Image 1 (cartoon, rainbow, N blue to C red):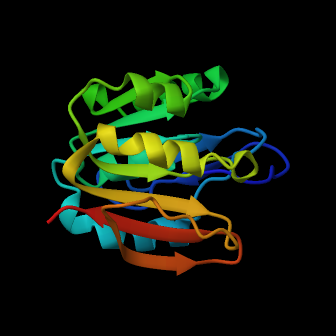
Image 2 (image 1 turned 45 degrees about the horizontal axis):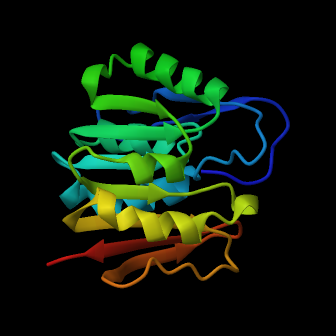
Image 3 (image 1 turned 135 degrees about the vertical axis):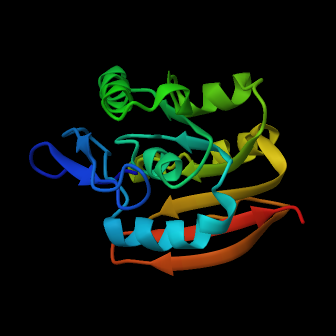
Length: 190
């Protein structure tokens, strides 16, 4: 959920489900670029059959738009992993305002460290959308499989020029592009 800074703080809206129309703040922070409404709408149309009851991992959560949207549309719970303490506080405030209860867990830690330390039940769906300038896809995608269920889904967002592949076992399910980003959804398992 990241790229170049846009002047000033803003917000994104949750576009479907129980929190539809709710706004999430977007801080003016380097690398923060929430996934566009159009791209999220397409992604969640692709994911709708697998969301009910899913455990979701939103790495590089930023505004939390992907994780909150997933829970809003039926996921059982989402772990929002973000290393910036200010963004973590904003995510917690949003979870409280939306009365998310145990459905949203905010983890203030680096994504790679979270994956290396992950001991919880495996995730059914992961969103990997790091700040584009950090080029963190390779390391994260190598560490990710251990945190995922045998049958799992993976969304990867990158610059349009990058051809990110998650590695063995993942099959491309759907993909799309905008002027600013490439959007790929992969599936692992039967």
